[in-house]
Structure formats: structure tokens, C-alpha cells
Image (tube, rainbow, N blue to C red; front, side, top):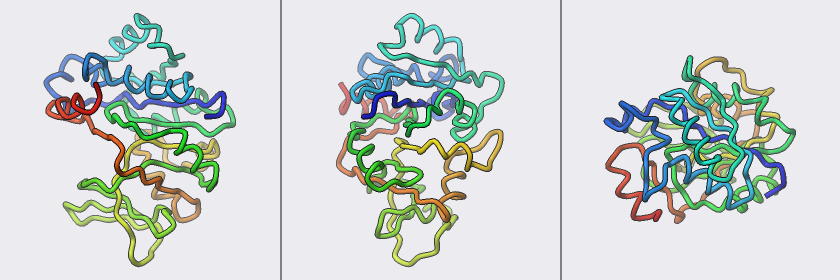
Length: 242
């Protein structure tokens, strides 16, 4: 990983699927095998030399600030992006943190409630070789919402398998369905290309940009990956991440 690579961990969500814990705590501080989700993701980034990490906060923000302070960022240089007045979702959160992330180099984003052992060095090498605007991890796991790719792993669209709703950016036959892993490498030009403002999902931006800009899926099927979205998923996560 290149020196000076920065990252953002999206940690501002309300965690409505994770009640009752999130009635009085931020989801980022939910514990898996003795460590919070936030600590686990910071330590994951550290394995690849990424120590300058933006963490956005909204739900019980002071608890996250206090935890970061007490732990000295668990060994990382944690920079808080404060969204306590309004939750901006992933896209809005990214744009708010632009001045903290944009040092002219590719940067990484993670979601705090996803735990994975995807090899970030391999993802970054893939990104550097193919030179897309965005590269992100995907797997062949089951999901109710999937991304659609052509034979060259280029993002062409999105589909909700439960409702049948789809959003097609590039109309091609024989598209492959894969699930989004929420581990992403962005080129810094992303900040000048995103059209949405305020509160929005980064997925909306992907689908807007995909027709004119190359966005690639990096298939890491077989790696560990758990969406710690609901309390019952903690037990699954604890089996995989000790």
C-alpha cells in the first residue's frame, strides 16, 4: 500500500436493524469477540499500513469520540467527521469528508458493520493495474440487492431481487450478479464528478457515473465477510473473527 493512503470508515448510521443495542449506543461500538466493530476495522486497515482514518459520526457521537480518545485511536490517527446535526448517508458523508481525504491519492472506504479479510493490497494492485475511477470488492454470496457486471467486471447496473426493481447504467446482455462488499478504492477525481448533494447513498453516484466512467468489481469470493447488521449476526461474526 502506498504511503499516505487515507481511508474513511462510515460509522454514522442509526443502526435500526441492530436494536436494542442502538437504542443507547452507536453501532460502531457493538462488540465482536471482545473488540468493537470500529476497533476491528481500524486494525484491519493497520495491517496494510493505513493509519490516517476518517470516522464519520452521528448516532450517539460523543460515545465514539470518547472511545477513540480513551484508546488513542487503537493505534490509528482517527479524524472525526461530525455529522451529529444530520446523517448524510454514505455519499453525503464522503463529500463532507472531502477535505480530510483528498491528498491527491487513491483512498479507501469501509462500512463499520462489515467485517472481512479481503486482502487490501490485492484490491489496490487491481485498481492500479486497471486504472478505473472506482474499484470495490464483490462476492458471489446471496443478497437481496445485487450489482450487475459485464464480462470485464465493469459495473453496468443494480437490481433488487425481491422487488424486481433495477437501475441500468450500461445496457448489455448476460450480466453477472454479484453482492457489494462495501470495501472501496476511489480515485480522488470522484469528488469533482459526484453530482448529488446533501444526504444520499454512494450507490446512487456509482450508478450515475458508471456509463461514462469505468467502475470495476473485484471478486474476492471465498474470503471471510460478515454483515454485522443485526444482533444475531454477532454470533456468526464471532465464529469467523476471534
